[in-house]
Image (cartoon, rainbow, N blue to C red):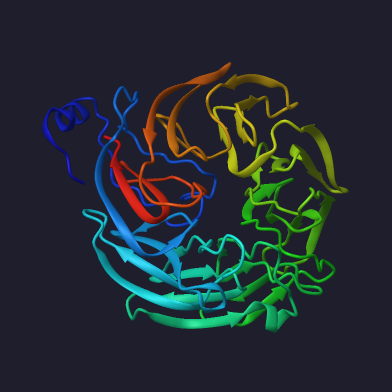
Length: 405
């Protein structure tokens, strides 16, 4: 960890210095969008200082990850059906491209940029392309350890805007969404790519959701969203434990579910559906509450200090009581955004091209600073990442790092 001047001294004297923390997968170490890093700037009277900006060989909406002293991010280049995806490895100190590996064809239709945020574990990267191919990359050899065409193996089909999931690792299983008959969800062996189980009885299409491993009603389960349902599955066997009907206008459900309590989970979708809380019991799932104005279009839910924050499609940022869905407060100035939480506050990267620092409070909170994202191109649809006191922001073919100390 690099420290400089009086800031470093102040951090040490205050006992705030902390070891570097990785962000090795979608939504962070625990897949809940929360960073535990200490010693971050509490107010942005001026925007965080840039450390570097790197133009990537390919563009994407996917978020970067940081693991083992390397930044990894996916991108794609080419045109239409000739579009190719690649995994890039960068030096976190200066953004230098160390190497890249082309993992195969990528989504080349509407909004054609790469979507999958890689999952890093055990010297390997796992990803799922927009055309339904699961790939395991050996990071030392810089080659594919295995690759599986999910549509071919499970008779699945692609969806309107292309597969947009970031795979979940549970033990020796890679969880993904082929969207085939009796295989809405499948588990692949992380060593070989062999099929370990499928969700027999659940044959729904994929719906852009990256699943979570949660403990609900005393039982570990994979919780995800498919085209028509929220579903809980046994991680060992794939048995469908429960389903709950949930579908919006376009069957777009990109928010990773968030556990609210021992037996409750929050799910959210845009296009006017909103957020809802489900209670999971022996008889299945039942709705506890629904708030339609909390229609998170993407990556917009955080549970912080017993309050649920949601970035709705039209704004503002809402603060809800997770027990009953009551709106406790609103943070004006935050529109449709991807949000992550840190001990210093919520970081909201919105469609207007800004990263906002929001200070949470019982009545919602306030904006305590703005960082303009004045680089890159296309839509501002990536999710911010915090690792080793550094904020990473991706916009199209540019990845930038900012000092949060």
